[in-house]
Image 1 (cartoon, each protein chain N blue to C red):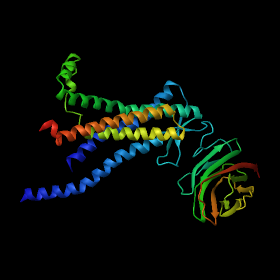
Image 2: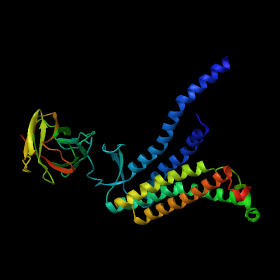
Image 3: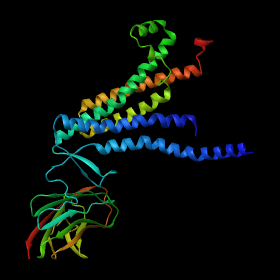
Image 4: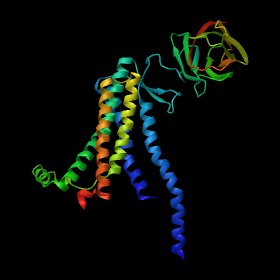
Length: 189
Length: 182
C-alpha cells in the first residue's frame, strides 16, 4: 500500500513539475536572447549623459523622473550648460485621449525663488495639445495647430517641483513622433 | 518529468550561459584591447535598465560587430566540435580506414557516443540560430558590419545542414532503409 501511495504521489508530482520544466526550458531560450539584445551598446555623449538622479553643483538641479509609460518612451535629459537642459521623449502612437507622465523634477537648493522656462515642440504637426503641469497648474507648450508657447514656472526656495508632461489628442495618432523641449533656468527672483 | 525534457534542460544551460558570456566578454575585451571609453548607465526604456554607452557611432558599430562575432563563435565552435565528433563516430562504423587514420593522429578517444545525439546538436544549433538572428537583425539595422552578418548567417546555415544530417542518421538507426539492412 505505501508503495502504491508513493507511486501515486510521484505521478501527481510529475504532472506538476513537467509544465514548470517546460516553462524553464522556454526561459532558457528567451532570457539569453533578451539579455543579448539589451547588451548591445548605444551611442551617447559620455560627458553630457542622461542626468537621471545626478545632483549637480549648480544652485538649481533638474533631474529626469524616468519610469515606464505606454505613450512616453525613450526619455532623455541632457545638461547643455549650467542653466540649460534639453529634454526629449518619443510620443508613441495612441488612441484619442489625454495622457500625462511625470517628466522632470526641479529642485531649488537656494534660498531664493527661481524662474524656469520651458520651450518645446514636436517635429511633425500632429493635432495634439501638449502641456506641462506643475503645482496643479497647466501650461500650454504646443497647441493642436502646431503653434508653440514659451512658459515659465517659479520654484520656491529650498523646494522641489515635479513637472508633468501632458498630451491630449481628439483623434487617434497612428505613428510615433519625437518631442524636444528646452528647459532653462532664467533668473533668481 | 520525462527523460527527454530533463536532458533538454541539462543541455540548454551551457549554450545559454555561453551566449550571454560571449556578448559581454566581446564588449569588455574589445573595450580593454582598444582602450575605448564606455559607460554603464540606467535607461528605463528597455526590459532591463542597464545600458552600455559609447561616445561615438563608429565605436559603437565596431564594438557591437566584434561582440556579435564573439557571441556567434562562442556557440559555433562547440557545435563544430559536436559535428566533427558525430561525423567521425558515424563514419567509423562503416569505414575501417577512418579508424586507422584516427589511430595515427591519436584521436581514438573522440570515437564515443557522448555528445553525438541529435538532441544536443539541435539545442546548440537553436542557440546558434538565436545568435545569428540577433546578429543579422543588427546588420539590417546598420549597427553591425555586413560581413559579420554574412558570417553568422553562413555558420547557422552550415550547422543546420549538419543537424539535419544527424537527424537522418538517427532516424536511419530507428527505421533502417530496406536496401541497407534487410
